Image (cartoon, rainbow, N blue to C red; front, side):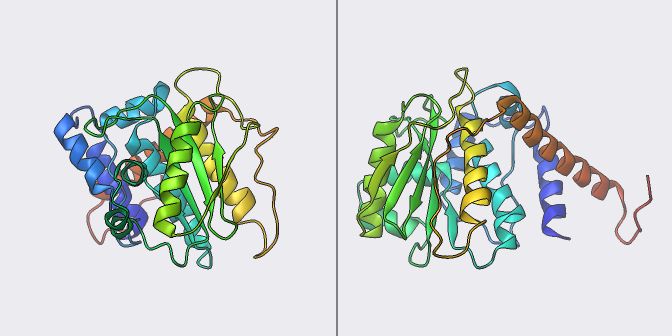
Length: 264
């Protein structure tokens, strides 16, 4: 069974009105995400009914963003084996920001010694005991090569303090100074719930159009000025991806092993 087939099967099992997650299970899910990015042979993160519901018209959950990161890893980064880029999960960033034990955090996070860039989803949740807390997402892109942390915030810099704290904490983990640079020309959301969508789309744009589209050593601009983001279209695109994988999983389940697929 291919990676995409395994993901489709697992996704179809989890995305249903009957699959709802209690707060305790949600907290365990956050802890599970503290592990480094999954290996290519492992299934994707499961999405729940609440996750898909939020993706339609609400504030994106940790799982929504973690799913998008895994999707980019497997559909984009897998095609660039020479790239050394980490898409850090929301729960990893939360651990980085809230745990002051640098050595413990260093052992919990991925090994960054060969990494050139790190993407970190930033959340303003200040309550370490509250899973899925906070009210705003922004994005921090750290260039370890250049020693710079770029902050993209779609709500007029609302998360500057949190992003600066994450940059400072990551600097300690890397044992390397990082210059913090907030980009005021980041595209701005028009409501109070699209911040997570902006994080996902800006992440993909920076990954594909900037970091993976240039030759090693070439200087590029990290500004997002004049980049228009269609948040409604982006939500529809993500939902379409999920639905496509769900249907693929359903077809696989209905097709007996060894039976060749039929043409529709």
